[in-house]
Length: 517
Image (cartoon, rainbow, N blue to C red; front, side):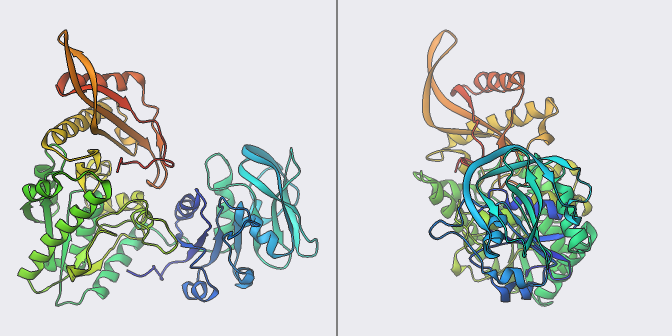
């Protein structure tokens, strides 16, 4: 699908900032469509073609004076639309107009700023407010004939916000997108709605109608679509949208690769049938496990699994020549993390983004590729998916293969399957399941000496991973109550004889990823 063109949009130029996706989410929370592009792809021609209502320049880790610092041309100030620079973007705009950026003491964390000149950007702000800063360089001076200072840091006197005198171009040194800036969302609303006059049209009903209409335009009436359904909210929502768009020309396929959670296959089939989707069921567990035998590398596992899925899909398509399309439940974070977007680094391959071989020979359609997970969940519920199912934790396409470190064996699968079920059961029992993004168990190859029944026992180490996140792009480890963790550890070591040690992962993303591989 092409970028939505029927909605007012805000374009975000990414300079490598850790909060860039949070900016996009905050804009969407205002019912305005937002899209991220890399600075390396940004051009005046592209932006004029996309016709955004406004442009936001993200933060980033670089200094504008560093060699190969990410930049865009000063044409960004000549677009005739509002522009907002955040942190690095703030400094970049200042340098474009002849301002002076210097290395200072740095401001990190909560910082008090004073609004020294009233402007529509600060509507609803008091004279002094707390914001979140994270920078070393700062704007030391601005040409008075070009810009007016709107806010300063109380302690350092650094310029915290400014506006160009002759156009709607702003810079703010702080991060309005993070929750630590209490009135940050109000500032973004002021910019997007008040200054840029964007219309709140990115709403659930409109999104569904847009996707269905786009699918009807994309897929010719004589052609069928093969849709792989795993039971996850992404693929389920994709199938339901396609059913609305193409009806009986949807060929839904559920492949059991033997890497599912306990009782998953039966539950998925029952749920899909209740929604009017009758999938073709293929039990390929033996083929997948055989292909993974002896494979230890994470990316190689993903490649093998993606290729096997593709072979199955190709076989189905060869049996029905009307199948010309393959539908995928790809979401926006999948696209970015797989390095699919120009300028993005590949963190890991997703078999539904970067792992499909060219020989598959099917056109790919991705109805959700511009949506975040929370948006997909809302659409799923609107399409009739039970809320408990729509809000299940994300489960990776390669399944438990990425939660087994090293070679995938029947023994390890049995351990991780049972341990993950225990984790979910205890979180539900404690009323914590919906409050976290993802929770599961991981098993590797290391062993730990233990004592069971007064006898020496050597068993596996199981690691518990529970994280909190808004979209999966960043995540923090959950401060789960000790008593819950104790129950989880106790049950795992008691109920799974092969396990002698349970550990808890307390590394956030970044620097880690959510899944182990």
